[in-house]
Image (cartoon, rainbow, N blue to C red; front, side, top):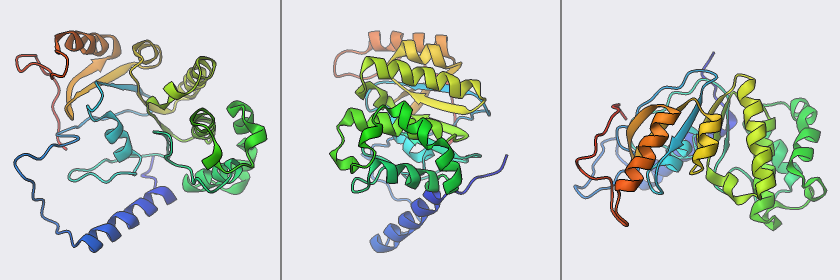
Length: 259
């Protein structure tokens, strides 16, 4: 394997550097005492072909973690070392240009993954068929409903054959039939030996797809291990948390790492 530098990563790095220069940011990190970290001391490794579930309450840091791994967000400190081509399906609105048509966005996403036009053409029909919105592919995506957007976004992410697939909770936007179709496709992707990181509040889906899981709370990894054990830990902690509260101080935490 090699460390893959895609067009998406190059754009992200260039944009981040330009913003830092405009803001006049210094290399030193100065943080006030009341600063809240979206992620704090999160460290883990994923082997090739592994399927990892990332679970936790709203605001735990799950989506931020996937944005960092997708090179959409730059970490304040620390780093993410990724070997392989990354495809991501994050919140609605990420990854597509609203003024371009669905067809143009398919080719744009393929180019950002480092694919040649011929490679994208070979997968185009499969993407169109899976999305179920083939007759709207020449319409600008800004006119799509959230459900249509997710259908096309998932079809693109799954069929452009990334080596690493990152999927956030956006599948909840689609209807039940399409969710079932997506889970079936993800199982197919897993069967081809690709690496998947799956964020979801659907514990049944997490247990069905994943071998291992991470539990995040307040930006930290509080449990890591076999998916059944981590899901049970999550459900147990959820019962301990009072409405509007957080995980009790005396709750046993596990897992260490460096940012």
